[in-house]
Image (cartoon, rainbow, N blue to C red):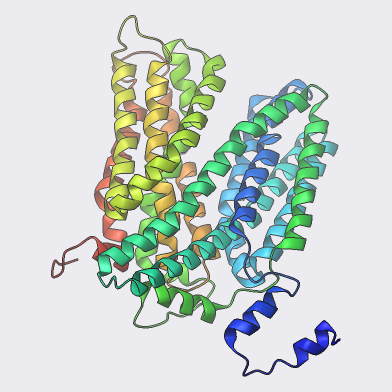
Length: 471
């Protein structure tokens, strides 16, 4: 009886594609990562992260007696390192391949956690926090690019099924493409949010035995992830030509664009889109920066912070999937303005309640209004936007595109929080000026809701417009 190797050698290059495909499936290694692995990775990554980082400030203050300035610098440096490095991390994922980038990101984050274990003074805490942030910058754009590729493959299947079923209407075909793309990204958001809930619960339990235990457990989580990625992620590097062919099956572009690593920086429409979309991260970041101010103003107290965050997580976990379905049917030209309008409405409502608080109402109610508007808006725009990045890339490597989108958001947070800081000083007590920061944020949201449609990729803009109507 012939050995498997001998049988494989008998297959000529002219063998039917189906037969060659069946045999290739029996070989070790996958050419495409399973979507379930990608979603589980986002869940576990967030569990490992949120089991540690939210308690860093507590450990620095209680265990090492550090002041607010030192803690603020360390936390700010970690956030800036991660957000600022996203573009670079995405470009590395495009050059190295997602597998190598994600494994490297896990190793770098393990290094950061171990540095924090050894830290006993401010410099080592600062270095450890920065290294931890860099690990996330290497991991996240690579994961998003893999999810984007999986969504693109799903879009190609939807497009093929439409063609096979005799569906020739361009708008219907585009709708199916958006449905397939945003569905996977909606699941990614839900998995990430579950990790946001479970991580702090695990961290609270581990903190009873010391912060070092939480750090070592987090490092162990990322070590396991690195091994899983080594074993189960495909080793193939990005192939721009294959990506362009796959994209052409969905979008049918007339020409295939160049696949330079930094092509996103030459795409003026995407740069404009990223600038406006960055308002979403600025808005959601106010749950960390502005929400404590509102809780102090209302008298609910910062002890209510955990309750409000739990409410936000439950809201996202329960509503993200149905809202994503509604937004898929509505399309980007409706979903994006609606999402930013909801955020603008949430901030405006809080501005009114901060200036004229209604007597007898629950003091926590204005904060819940803020969280509801911010969370609902984010649920409308985030999955849709992650899918739109594939259209902007048009077959080019997507890591740098996702990285630029995140880095733009990080820059918006730095600049926006700088502008908001003096305004928040006016919002600690009910007064005629207490509305200032909230109206500022509401105006940003309203402006984005008005103008972001002008920066949609051409295919999305055309899909929602009747034939003959100008762009």
